[in-house]
Image 1: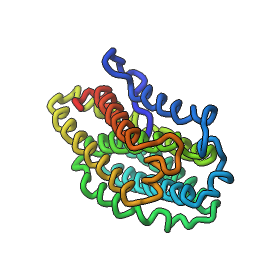
Image 2 (image 1 turned 135 degrees about the vertical axis):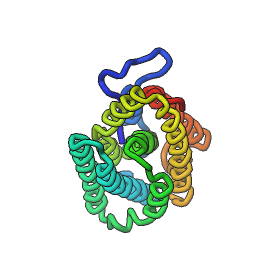
Image 3 (image 1 turned 90 degrees about the horizontal axis):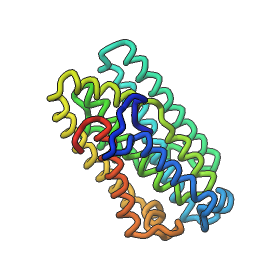
Image 4 (image 1 turned 30 degrees about the vertical axis):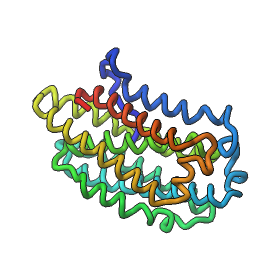
Length: 267
């Protein structure tokens, strides 16, 4: 779920490349480490003294961990739809990278005295329902789903990371590293559209549906978890208010539009 572009993807004046978008998000997430106040200027030992902040981080890591585990399962399943052995092997490698991210989050939860399974459990039903509602019908839809859905999730977590303590922020950014799936998806989808242009219309509709479902699912998860929602609207994290939450979702939507342009699809 990560940065987005093949090296030879042409850049246009009207849209930044997805790779540049991801770099911007990473830079924004890292900047508060130098200029931060409040929790963003603290390490985990200091910040976790606040029980509400600790609960929010446990929720965040639990949601991320289950998302990575689900991504592993999905990529392994998508490999069955791969048209070539090379494609199958590429997806298997990416699935392995997602599982490694899951292990880092699981181990971090255990290290801070939390049960990883219990931390993930509140998010399992919502994420499973999202994947049930957005099951791809073919190889290309599976690639677009990974490209769109994972990227929206990455954007959301990078936004949240800006307000985390330094130790948790570093872990979150590390597990959001690109597994290579994004560039692979862009390359394959662009090639398919060039070979058969009418495929683009179907995939654009599919991507719009994914965008709506992903944002709705993210909002439901946050609304259901008091500590996590309080972090987002400013009860814990310094400088985050309701207006900023709205701007955050606007930035996520804008990033999605730029990625669709890189794919050659209308957002």
